[in-house]
Amino acid sequence: MDSYNVNISPKALSQLNSYINYINDTLLNEQAAYNVWLDALETRERLSNIAGSLAYCQHPQLKALGYRSINFIHHKYIMLYRVSGTNVFVDAVYHQLQDYENIFVNESNI
Image (tube, rainbow, N blue to C red):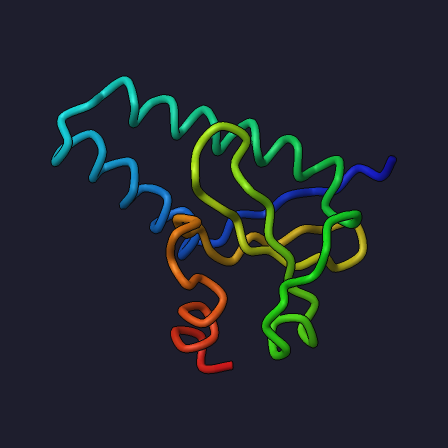
């Protein structure tokens, strides 16, 4: 099993923080917000071990650029990432119910 150095982009961190802030500040559920944060950390750790073994995205442009996604372990969020050698670059975090592949392509002008 390979070990990868996981790098979270400022955009992905901002997206994750937005979800957590919404849960904490709008839904007024501090424990749930904390649990999502812990889940993100667990998922990041898991990604450091299995990043190269997960399937590529289905969107043709993302697949061509080597993007993959990993589901959070306990919550309905995903990390969109790419692998370069032993480095993993998490470029976005989305809720699974979003059309995240198309949203990412449109936001990134790919």
